[in-house]
Length: 177
Image (cartoon, rainbow, N blue to C red; front, side):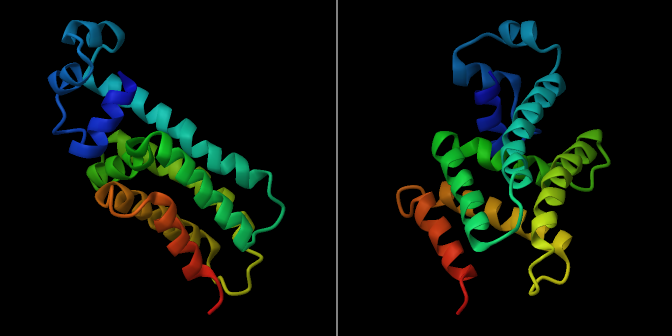
């Protein structure tokens, strides 16, 4: 149920996805969904919890790193590629939900900000030693957008470019010219 909801929320958005859409995608009745989740919003909460666990993988990696480097950034992008290759929609669902709920003043908006903030703190810590970076927090937030953009392009260009090729292009851009 969570995988199907994640896929549909990523592709169609939360508000456009119906419980019927989810049921049809996995061959269950709405009663089966509502047996596990009392409402569509409860299902959204469970999806967000699942996505939060996924983004924690990045923070956990960064928390084990002493100092930032191109190799660290490359490994984070590799983590994203491995995640994308397993579950492409899960890689972009958080971004899709953030886009959908931005400026809504819905409690989900703050929850999504909090999830991103944990990662931004971890990345900011290792970016602070880079003399070329003036504001590590802003750079960390920009990194989130760039990496999620790579994942979006991976879905959009499926069959044209692999996620690994797109990621390699991003890393090549970071290398000194």
